[in-house]
Length: 358
Image 1 (tube, rainbow, N blue to C red):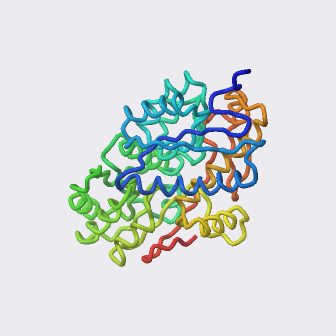
Image 2 (cartoon, rainbow, N blue to C red):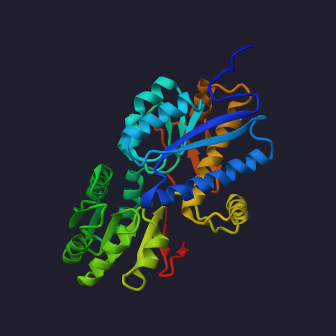
Image 3 (cartoon, helix red, strand yellow):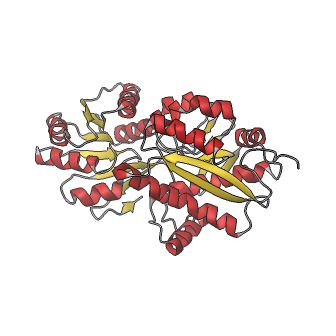
């Protein structure tokens, strides 16, 4: 019997591997992103799959540990025979897997929460959909300077990704001949929320750009308010706007978030309408997290469709490198020198009830 053309590909199935944090507070949003992706994969499988093959996703928890992530990549390639990777999470975890990925030749599509420097480390293996953090920082600073705000501070997580974003905000400000009035590093365990909130209030910044996950952003906003600060807060896309707004209620001068996928509640876009219908049926939370997963899965599905029935890793790479498409009003283009497909950014305001308004 002839050997299957490639690992993870049979006549009726293609296996995709995923590793990410799926436990604890940081795992909660990732599960929602992946549930959104599942909506698209389930829908295409219900119609017979792609070129007659159904997509099966195998997902493993790496707890955001680079060592566990590398072990998961190896396990997914060996034991689970993954053909390609989808939606893998984190900066240090992705960077650590650079060698395993390049040796296997398996493409990795639509990584989530991966820093710009980690994206560079997997050049040739990784294809990222969402805009870079540099692009987000530039868009936020551009928006603020356009409305006449010049006293801008940053509040980022006290980890390598946060340190990188702090520098990106600084560079975006420098392009407008500005310097940050404060740059605070906030610990992920919440122990510095009060002190950093006070530092932001004392800086007399008109606006604060936040790169803070989970509930930390909301806690820092409350601390700044309690210390007499009256600045607007602008979150990068990792800030969960709905969670943050419900946490702070009226205790803020306002919150806006830069989003890297289009508005999930659009009445005119057919992709958003299909997504909401599927999400309601499957009881998946409708919002930016699951919509990003859904859009990412559509990119993955389209890349498999363009590769065709003769499915090899080399052919999938070729299809991805030639890929230009428009999904939900967002351009995804991998034909240039960058391994990031989208430059889409949209600023949305968040109401105190946690609703998003364009």
